[in-house]
Amino acid sequence: MKIYLPFFLLCLLLIGYGYYISLKPNTEIYSYSLNDYGIKIFTYPEDGIADLISAQLKLESENDSPVLLTNGPIFDKGNKHLGLVVRDGKELSPLNLEDGKGNFYLKPNGVFAIENRNVNILPTSSYAEMRPSVSLAFQSGPLLLHEGKIHPSLSKSSKSKFTRGAIGVTQDGKVAFGLFKERTTLYKLAEHMRDDLNCHSALYLDGAITGFLTPRESFNLEGRYAMVICIVKK
Image (cartoon, rainbow, N blue to C red; front, top):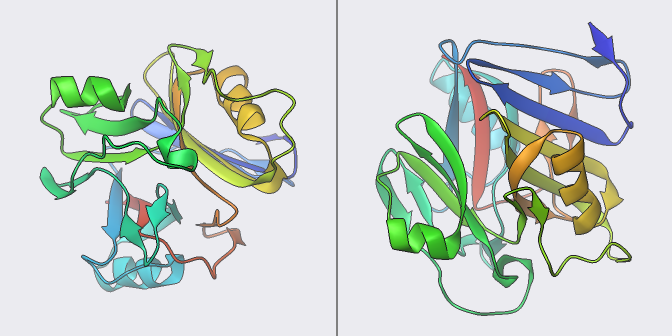
């Protein structure tokens, strides 16, 4: 089945036990069981992997079949984590409750977390209070959507446009990625996650350096990141 969306948009929607990818032009819909597919992350400097191609080669050397690779959350100079990173239940970088300049510190920021296969995006302050036992988590900012409401600091009339990416959770518990190849504002990204992907919560990943790699298409393979998010066939 094919659908037609704006040419600059790639969407990945994890649907309960499967997901679909939407690409334009000639968008095709792919759905897979999460019994057969999973999520992995590579982090720098822990794994020594900071780009999509290296992540792909590493996965293939381990006999994994990657379906999509994209950059993770905002990071500091030198590809250092700015906030919380948890992988396989082990904390690689602590929760960041500090104030600062830039999108990461635009409060409220948030944490994407998987706990007992349940997916959630929490405000950082809520995560700090709850301290859930998670298998995977990472922190970024701003929290584009919370309980269906767009971040109060985002302006509909903003002129700041970059390639951008976000991760969200839909009203029925699905996980969605929105990756824009064409420059857009944070407000428009939040609006898209809410209105087009039916997300109740969404977390900004990064902008200007956004990249992705699928078997069919790639964008900005030169980017270097502190984290690469991978969708793989088990």
